[in-house]
Length: 130
Image (cartoon, rainbow, N blue to C red; front, side):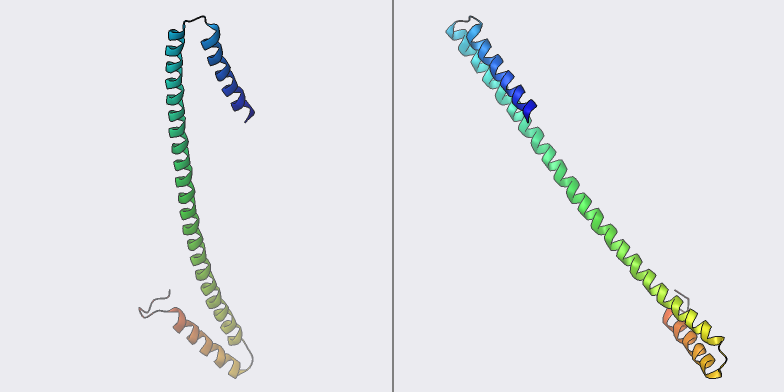
């Protein structure tokens, strides 16, 4: 902020010095003043266009970043759901295998039923494991 104020103050001071201390006649000073006003207006217009371009670019970048973030969050959630389903199936198979090694026949039979139930849940209608 301070360097901008110094630049603006320097430009204004230079313009005043050119108009007052250069020793020009009134008509020459008026012509120079018109040229300076036109140049400053053109500079302000260019500055406004640059500011608009930068604002547009920043807005577009932020919107793109928001879309990418939402897309990646959706993919992560999908992977997490898939991992949770795989974990449940793995836990079912582990529990069934533990039951198959049990001493009692009833528990082993329950283990066989659990394996069959887990396989029916994980094999779709195509007959292939998912």
